[in-house]
Amino acid sequence: MGHDRSVRFAEPTVSPRVLAWTSEQFAERIDEAMAIYVEAMGYSPGAGHQRALTARNHVHIDGFACRVALLEDDSLVGFGYGYTTARGQWWHDLVRRALTDEMAREWLDGAFELSELHMLPEYQGRGIGREVLTQLAEAIEHRTMLLSTPDADTRAFRLYHALGFVDLRRNYLFPGDSRPFAVLGATLPLQSDGP
Ligand SMILES: CC(C)(COP(=O)(O)OP(=O)(O)OC[C@H]1O[C@@H](n2cnc3c(N)ncnc32)[C@H](O)[C@@H]1OP(=O)(O)O)[C@@H](O)C(=O)NCCC(=O)NCCS
Image (cartoon, rainbow, N blue to C red):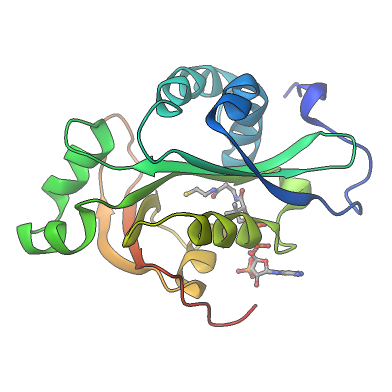
């Protein structure tokens, strides 16, 4: 598999710093971010191009917030972003159908949807994804944060549970994807059970 060298970097021993980007800053580097998404998720480059188109729309949604992990030389090695979820959005409407009305009122209305959270494989498992997510959660004023993730024993799943996310729906099939997903939610501020 070919790699886009523009998102690669010197030594994985170098510690990235986590910082906030505006929607404009993120929009300028969406292609790099989606190259990370492709590597982190093991998807084809085509999936990254597709996702980049979607992300270009996401930056304009109310409540957009983003944190990135950057090396000294400005290389992007990880990112997380989301926005206020609302009726009419693809993910929101599907998740609303997956939940009971009561759960939707309690969790989904006015929630922050964590749309993407990815670290390059070389930088995973070092606490950086946790830092990206906790900084993002601290910066927003939403009551709850929701996300969907492949329903399996992954590092992502363990991280979310460790930060207080609970299962709202398991084994949910989104259209166009044969893998089951879990829909998770957390009330903010996040409650960490320690590193
Ligand atoms: C999910 C993801 C963003 C999490 O980021 P990360 O930087 O790897 O996560 P963290 O290092 O903060 O925490 C995850 C693990 O590292 C451990 N960890 C946390 N801080 C650590 C530190 N300072 N040193 C060593 N390990 C640490 C955690 O205990 C956890 O361990 P586990 O893998 O045994 O469960 C990243 O792993 C990733 O991109 N995965 C693939 C893509 C993906 O699944 N994205 C989410 C889709 S919803």
